[in-house]
Length: 142
Image 1 (cartoon, one colour):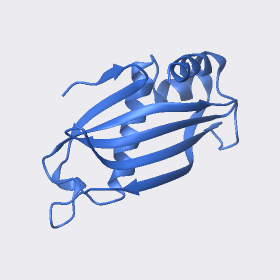
Image 2 (cartoon, rainbow, N blue to C red):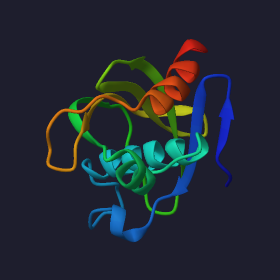
Image 3 (cartoon, rainbow, N blue to C red):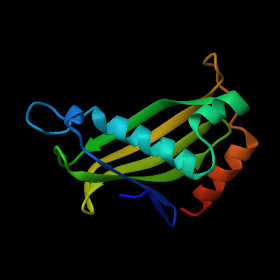
Image 4 (cartoon, one colour):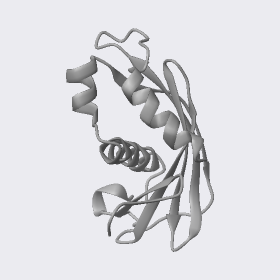
């Protein structure tokens, strides 16, 4: 399973582990948020940075401001899944994304996420111009 970008969609593949499931082997609902977070982190890496570098170099970090999730079908232990991430908006201090968890091309979970850019002490901060530029380029392709 290898990460890929096709057009404007970043695809993060992963496998469901025992720790992701309940006693029946079904993915616990809140873990889809963790999968989406991992995919956004890998998207940053794909774009040439990461969360640690953002904090060290620019003194900013991202925090989820709001998130809307719709669940369609469950995922299960040992299944190979993908998170598809599309940047839907880039503001001065915010970033919006649409994320879908997929199994064999079938939609399991659909999410809209808005992230706030924050200073290390938790105050709103502007997205660094360099990062905003890279994200805006990705957004323009959508």
